[in-house]
Image (cartoon, one colour):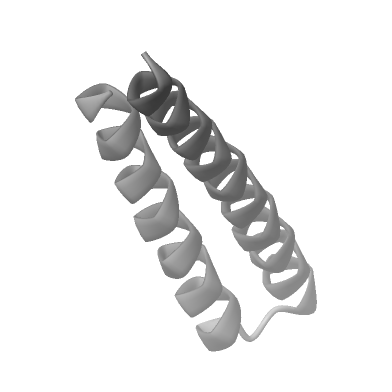
Length: 62
């Protein structure tokens, strides 16, 4: 479980860094690329968070 939480934090950090680069980029293509990356990483983080929540509920049930 701790590994999943570590990966979750890494995904959130990476998404925030991509969003920052997106905001600072002057090239429209780079801005669009980093916007997509930030969105994708945020979605992955949400999926990992849901998996962690589901695993936690399963652990409580046993």
